[in-house]
Amino acid sequence: MKNLYSLILCFSVLCLNAQVVEDDFEGNGTITTWYGDDCGIDTDYPNPNQQDINLSNTVLQYNDSGGQYANIQFDTASNFDLTIKNSFKLKLYIPYNAVTGSQTNQISLKLQDGTLAQPWTTQSEIIKPIVLNQWQEIVFNFETDNYINLDSGSSAPIGRTDFNRVVIQINGENNNDQVLAYLDDVLYFDEVSNDPVYDNLVWSDEFDGNGAIDGSKWFHQTQIPNGNSWYNGEIQHYTDRVDNASINGGFLDLVAKKEAYTNQGVTKQYTSARLNSKFAFTYGKIEIRAKLPSGVGTWPAIWMLGKNITEPGAYWQTQGFGTTGWPACGEIDIMEHWGDNQNFVQSAMHTPSSSGNTSNKGGQTISTASSSFHIYTLIWSPEKMIFSVDDNVHYTYNPEVRNANTWPFDQDQYLLFNVAILPNIDPSFTQSSLEVDYVRVYQESPLSIDGVVPTETISFYPNPVSDILHIAFQQIVDENILIKIRDVSGRLISQNSNTVENGKTIFNTSSLSSGIYFINLTFENGTSDIFKFIKQ
Image 1 (spheres, rainbow, N blue to C red):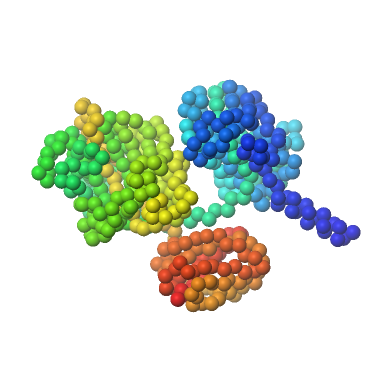
Image 2 (image 1 turned 60 degrees about the horizontal axis):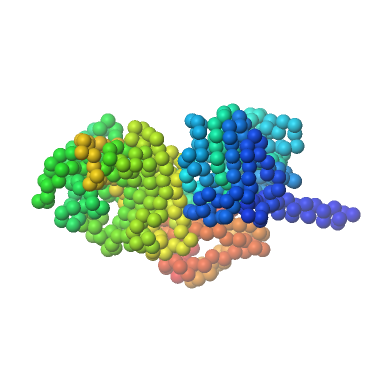
């Protein structure tokens, strides 16, 4: 009988671990209890925007025609164990003209105990911002995201086991506004983040004070690259005058002006400024708090180019680093704004794979782009680029194949700020400014060599190593671990997930050059160890 109980217990645990909750709305899902609460629902609706990240034929249509508490929901046969799977994700598309009223564009996912007469009393909710007119993937992590418990006395959702209902609600409740939305690829899963954490401020300019810009940080790029004009049909001169670039009251002002100006033997009717940073780096988080200029024909940009670009007059070219033409050097457009499309900001990637064209891009509308400051952010990791405004992500560049054609972004890039003037400039334009409050660059915290102390329960061999490094654990049998390799300066060289089986795993060092490296192991419980090894 004891063995029977043990067998039943093991079977129950296996079933719990194997709980599959998903729906692709093409007949492959496990969710059979979809229900619209004061909200129309169609789980077999033709995909109205079959492109970008969602090429599915059919999706779920969410049709809120003004229900005060409209939502959709589903129940599961067994309760969720968030310690095993902590997250839900879905894809969402809402056309521009499919919402009414003035509600904040958002989506919330709520977990409830559906067996109760008043299930909302048990509710734990995560709210995420959304953008309109494009498919986006949204993740709700009940372990790491900010959550709201309806009952403030309830414990954190990660420690609860009473949830068996999922409620999805768009643009809030207690209103009669209308929403027509489309959902796809709903999945319950465990999110383990392998992304680096960029929390160490390595370079910044707060633009404090008044006067000229800091020449130790910035370079005025003024040389006309082709002798007569700038690229892309721009019609301005870039100057090194304080009239066009200065610090005023703690803000950088890049001023585009209508004025006749002669330089390099060429007279133009507009002036502006183009700054190159004297700091170049690989990987990190870049934050720029800025307010944009306005006016048809203005084209402000906050962007990056490879330090190795061969561009006449560019700072790093003058320092002897120019070896590679454009677009092979790579270009990252963190923010671009065109005055004839006021308030729409765009991010884009320019690579050889697209022949330099603006094929890989995404953007969003910011209603106060030129009247208020907003934070433009790029997170640049070895795997992907994530672009956002005020933490609202609008584009992720994550090519399936990363090589010189798609990913020339494993080398240093530098920052550029400029305001260009295009031929369609409004004749009544006089001047307008790109105002920057600050620019900050964060990278992963550096390693301390003195702090590398081997743990007796983990062994590495051989060391020095020529190809395969074997790692053995005394206290871990089967587990997924994250392996990061850094050089002696602390620079991240690679990262990947490995599976420990029977207390052992391996790491292939064949791609590393000879030298000293540090291997950082991060375990499922959040702890980590660092070891030094020598690659022959």
